[in-house]
Length: 499
Image (tube, rainbow, N blue to C red; front, side):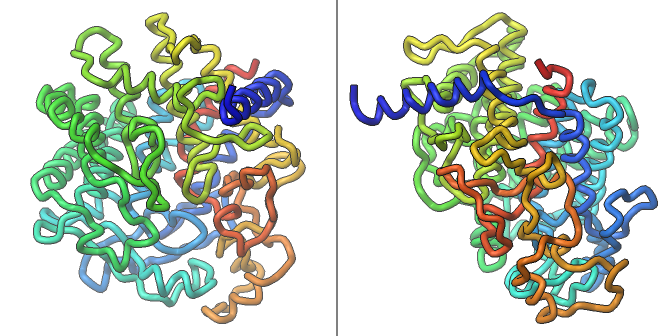
């Protein structure tokens, strides 16, 4: 046996032992807090029922300099820029979480719907002018050079849009997917709103498909390196079409998915740090790459027996086999404590997004009594659920440091997260303005952040299971909406399936 194979086998044993000896977690509490986090990321005029009360109104004039109302939406992470590409992916994942697990959310369901609607109301504004899709608000260089509360912002709030002449198919198609998925969520709650979302989703998808191109080419200086598109825009087009087929049942969208899915098979994509994918694009899923998500989403439609298979089921199986430690075709790494690792920053985004897909696929497989075969290894749905719980429990504190990576959950969690609003005194405590330079002392402070961004999940530990609680170490200490969004659905499941 080679050294590599022995190492992988050892990691598999460690992970299995970890899963069998996990501490009990309050998944319901974690679910509530994971949704509350989104209130801390809100931009715009805050509602009367705002629970994260140290946050106040911000960016109330976004878009007004060009005569467009772009107030609202979310700040993506610890900064004050509205990046619509990751915001749209986070919205799609929140909507998918509710579609799959909403019935298990109890009182948190309404709050989850509020989190989705805060984004979709904004996306309706961002797509309100035919032929244009607004994809960002705020100058990222100016913003990242200042450590300011969102309520104090004085950096440029420049709006950036794609158009027929300067296309951005990836971000437009992801917004379409978010609107289509959300339309399904609201269908039984607010039919008129649902219809409006779906109509706009179709319009934006048509725009993304008809005027093809990457927003890197037209807006590269402002979107890169922050949310540069490394994987191409073809996956977002297929992803958007898959969601539109699910929402409309129109064969046009199903035919689109089937006719274009093979373009992804031949596409050489890169990870968010520029490396070519290890293990094939079927193994990738996140704000920039939708391949595995497409296969899992469509696999349910295929397994129902009403649609032709193509590569969706085989690729979903290969995705499973690329993740599990005992698989002979594993293409990810694991820390000694059992946390999944992939290239790119903010590693917990991979752990939460891939865990969500594995859990959803396990539910689809269970409905047709089907297992996955990774060479000679038979993977049951029970094993997939067990694996996913292990990742969630690691995040919540079952790890070598006995540390929760969700702020406000458990007895030990990150106190000095890379987040402007959390690290600066609130308006209630310091009503006077803190300017760009004035925030530096708070960034450099060794004291814990004065405001708890409850529910925020940070980038997480390094591959040695070590974590330095430091604002400056943003790769590990910064929370993002796209870490939390897939975790919402997973926590809802384990809230009702804790044993």
